[in-house]
Length: 90
Image: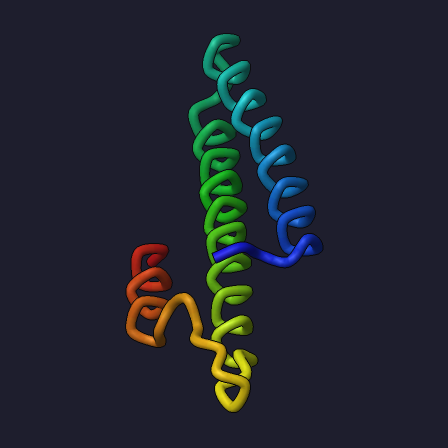
């Protein structure tokens, strides 16, 4: 399934920001910063990564919900597959 360009752009932007966050955590570890601060930043990274996944799953759900069945269009993923993808994120 191909995502709309606005979804791709948003996801790429989020992943680039996340990449910077992960590098920041790596630097914190290398510099021996406080464990609580590192864990806090790791938690923020995990939440950001979850949001990227949710963004993609929601886009997939929208695609399936708006597929024009009357025109013979068949969604690339059915509801069960979308549910499995969503559950992988939790």
